[in-house]
Image 1 (tube, rainbow, N blue to C red):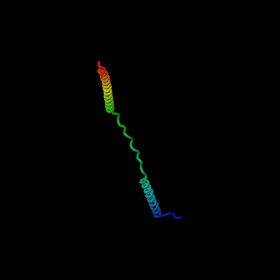
Image 2: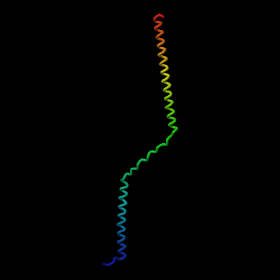
Image 3: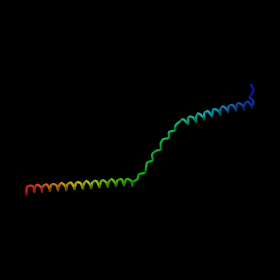
Image 4: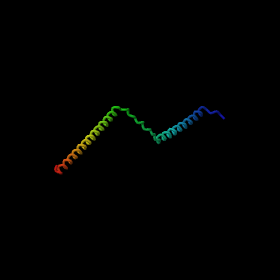
Length: 103
């Protein structure tokens, strides 16, 4: 067998390079198609935890205590009023009985 000539070697190298280029283009096209069809699911960012705000909790506590005190005073006022009304009705009933009997 005869040794290939430099022109023949160059022709073989050019054919291999052309085949490789076509193969690289096909692989790149397939990869691009796969990437286009894949849906990338990005996890949602972690929720940012707000810093502790002492002022807010002091205000909430103050409001709760104030409402509780107002409710307690209202309940005491109703109890005093009910006691006074009951005493008044008992006294008036006693007076009515006395007047009715002629005393």
